[in-house]
Image (cartoon, rainbow, N blue to C red):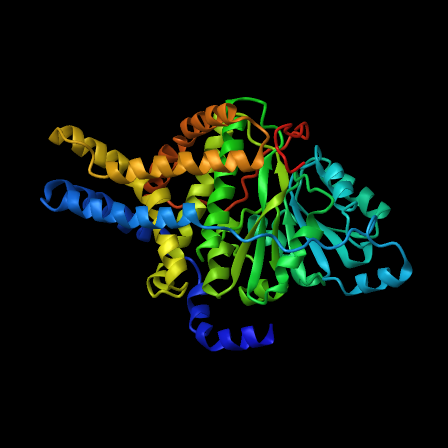
Length: 464
C-alpha cells in the first residue's frame, strides 16, 4: 500500500489544484457545451462528410462495445469465514481482531418508516461485532426519525447518532463529511436508509481491498418492490443493465462507478480525495471520478445485492433521474481539463468518452438532429449511433437479467423489451436537463426520495 501511495503522490500534486478549487461557472460551461453539440449537429447535417464522420465514430464505439460485451470478468475473491458457522473455537476466533474495521455510514432525513428496521438489520450483519460500527446522521429530520434514533442508540453500543442542525449545508455529502473523520474504520460503507443488506455482505466485500490500488467497491443494487408496477419493473431491468455494464467495463480496465447505496470506500482513498464533495448533487458520481483521477480503482460486486425501494410514479422517477442526470453531467463540466489531459489513463479515458457519447451526447442532440432530419427530408445523422446504443442496451439488459434472476428465456425477453421501452425516458431526461442547466443553475440541496418502508423482496432476484 505504501509503495502504491508513494508512486502516485508526485503525479497527483497538480490534480489537487483542480479538484478542490471550487465548482463555479457551471452554467456558462454547460451553455458552451450545449451550443457546441447543437452547432456540431447542424454542421454534420449540412456537410458532405457529416455522415462519414458519424459512421467513423460509430465504428469506434462498436469496437469498444464489443470489447465490453466479450470481456471475461474476474471471479470475486473468497468470502471471509462466517462468525456463526465457520469459527468454532477461541483459538480460531482470535484472528478476527485483525479483520479490517468497518464504519457504516447512513445519512437519514425523515426516514421514520424505515430507520428502525435498517439499524437493527445492519447491527445483525455476519461480521465480528468488535470490528464494525454504525453511524447514522439525522439531517434535520422533521418527523420522528430523531426520537427513534436516540432510542436505538440507548439500546445498541455499536450505534452512534449525530444530529445535524437546521442550518447545516452540503446535503448528503455534508452529512457524511460531518462524521467520517470521527470514525475509525479502515473501510467506510455507505447505505441509504431503505437499504436491505444481506448478512454476508461485509464478508464478501472486504477481500477486494487486499489489492492496494482498490479504492472502492460498489455492490449491485436491486429493486425490493419490483413487482409493484411498470415503473418499478423498469427500474429492476435498469439495475440489471447497470450491473452488467459496470462489471464488464471494469473487466476491460474501464470506469467502475459508485451508486451511493451499498458503496464501500477505503479510508485512505477518501482522505486523498478530501472527503465527499459538498458542491455536487450526486455525491457518488462525483466521488467516482475523483477516485479514478487519483488513480484508484473501483470494483463491482454482483452477489449479494443490496436492495432498495424503487420509486412508484412517473413524477417521482422524473425528479430522481433528473437529479442523477444533472449530477452525472456536472462532473464532466467540473473535471474536463483533467479528463482531456488523460489523467485517467488511456483505457479509462476511452471508456469514459464512449459512455459519455451514449449517455449524454446522444440524448442531448436528439431533438435538433430530428428537426434537421425532418426539415431536410433525410434520416437523422446520429441514427447509426442510436441504433448501436439500443442494440447494446438490449443485449446487456438481457444478459444482466439472466444473470440475476430465475426467469425463463421467454420471460427475460419480455422483461428486456419492457425495460428497453422504459429506458427511453433517459433521452427526455438528459435532453431537458442539459438544456435547463445551460440557462439556470440548480440549488445545491438534498431532494430525497420518500421511502414507505413497505417494499417486499423481489421473488425473482437470485441473490436472496
